[in-house]
Image (cartoon, rainbow, N blue to C red; front, side, top):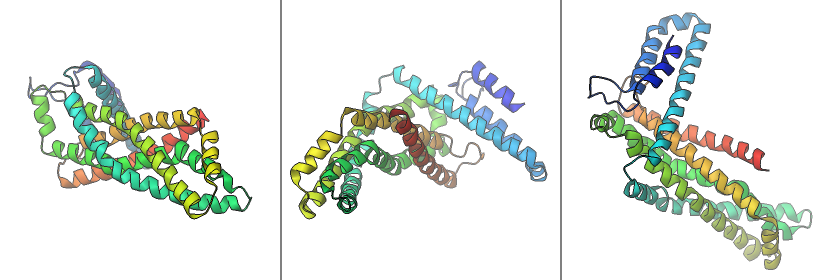
Length: 307
């Protein structure tokens, strides 16, 4: 019954109707309360009937997937809706991009050094040390650069997004925005999405550069690989199709990180019906774990399509 009513509620009601105007509640909160009521009222029976338990779990997952889809749609809609978001976006660029350069740089440098060391000893078994530049470049540009950058941004910036928005939820700041007829998606989520889409390609390019230099230092400076052979292998193997794959991944990873992390923070404690520090911590943990897994799955899907 709830599964049937949920789409009707989403279609008929304004998703940004404030709880302070006309006594109406936000449609997301209405559906969440319905699901919570159903879950609590049937808790005892579910323990006795595994089939009902499985059905209730499937229902909650379908509801969560639909709510995440609507969350993404409202966030995208905020890009083209006024007011302009220049200053909030600039602030998020500074937070997501500028403050991530150090951690991305360290990660890339040591990853490139490990690739140089391992690649040299592996290629030496076949007398192909001159291909070290090709191995390091392709590994970083196609796979390790985008994935490691996305994971570092998730751990540093994504967790902060989930925690910050989660605190706003439990302190009722999001409800206050709705009372003032301010779209919380456009105000809180959209600037973060725009900033992430701008910053992640630059961070990935920076990661690729530092990683290649790290592999160069180990391969040429420490292990004695010919400098010309290293750069010739790199430039002859890495082409625009490899670079374009990295940038496609950067866009997809940006959307995944921001949507999952902000979604978890935005609805921290809503499904449980209780709002406190414990819910914020759980939302932050879930955001990082789910985003990291989604990035790895997305990496496989994009690679399988573009290769």
